[in-house]
Amino acid sequence: MKILVAVKRVVDYNVKVRVKSDNTGVDIANVKMSMNPFDEIAMEEAVRLKEAGIATEVIAVSCGVTQCQETLRTAMAIGADRGILVETDVDLQPLAVAKILKNLVEKEQAQLVILGKQAIDDDSNQTGQMLAALLNVPQATFASKVQVSNGQALVTREVDGGSETLTLNIPAVITADLRLNEPRYATLPNIMKAKKKPLDIVKPEDLGIDVSPRLKTIRVEDPPKRKAGVILPDVKTLVEKLKNEAKVI
Amino acid sequence: MTSLVIAEHDNQSLKPATLNTVAAAIACGGDVHVLVAGHSAGAAATAASQIAGVSKVIHMDAPYLENGLAENLAQQILSIASNYSHILAPATASGKNVLPRVAAILDVAQVSDVMKVISADTFERPIYAGNAIATVQATDAIKVLTVRTTNFEAVASSGGSAVIEAQAAVADTAQSQFVSKDITQSARPELSAAKIIVSGGRALGSAEQYQAILEPLADKLGAALGASRAAVDSGYVPNDYQVGQTGKIVAPDLYIAVGISGAIQHIAGMKDSKVIVAINKDPEAPIFAVADYGLVADLFTAVPEMLAELS
Image (cartoon, rainbow over all chains, first blue to last red; front, side, top):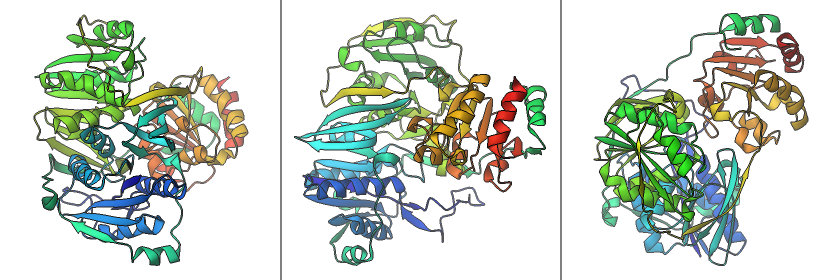
């Protein structure tokens, strides 16, 4: 069984982003970029399935600018066998990425696709679900546990108020939540080995896919600031303020 | 112009998030219809028909719709999608799960986590964990939206008198099967609907201390209990207690953060609360930057003291 894992290059989760002064977006020039943390979890899960003898090959795919090659090398250092970069300078939105991935899943005959549940830049939380729909296969989003056997995946997923467990007929799409696993650190020998693994580059046009954006970004602004609060001297004052000033208890 | 709201329900009653989503649909303009797809969900459909501002309820009923499986629910929505200008669902685990499937088949973009409807095609949404707000215009014919419920005041759950139209459900896709559900049982209000939330962080030190310190205060205030990701990851409380960008987005009247430092991702999940109280030993903790009332104190003395003061 081949597994395809989608990995996105995003602003590192430790970076506090700044809105550009012309309000056209956030400033990502000269900030640290990393693999989307949820995608790292997705990659780890795929590699574990390979180590368990369930998967035969793990393919990492990234869509975007030429520097996404670094993200793919990281994926290969975690354990992906090879990488595919779908290279474009266009601002890719989830529907466009889902169409690209569908094309590659069919070409590669991947049986399982694992993605992060959302990217921490646009926070859309759409690509996995869209891909499952376009492939007409089942999905399990927000996965916290995955077991694969006999052409089925048993997946526990996080839902409001607790969790639920589903079985999916394979082929299927799974999106990873935080608690699915703890991704390993790539070791130096594995980072060196990853440099020699195959990395193919294609363009969306080669795949015949129109990736033009459907959502137009009109403005990007800072969120409204909360007005400064006060530090209170003691618990008595706090309770008094909550009762008589804020009137919330 | 007519909007379709996908009701969130447990086949018996509607989840409150449905009411906030109807409010967003009304803001888009035009009529509002509600889809109740479930199994033996007549009571939920009746409840939907009483929502203020709803003109029609479409009720689809089949055994395979009982658990809201994404594949089947998406098919039901798609069977009527072409009648609508807007399709909305709350940005809950269930809404986020199903709606992108609908958008993809319709070949339209989805706008996730709508915070504000500017016009019928222009919306505000958070990006980068709420550290920036984007105004986006959807250029496709059908707008597919998930709604950040805390940003829309719920419409009244009664006073409406919509017609209920029963429609035949589309066949079972049989692509996935529901196995089991493990929902945390609690007498306290649900986190996303609570008026007061008492939330604890890693400083509580253990599951036992989390319970011993925070539960009496929550009981006294009739509050829901929440937690930071650090507290969840340390195993003090189950996953579904987590408030934050990767957990629940909440906006209660009063949010009491106890021993929570205030990581960006936590603040993104609670900064829309009306009044925020922070109790933390560290005067430099970032949580104080968003708190209306701060108390620099040891939580192990301050919280019991607060409880005594309230009694």
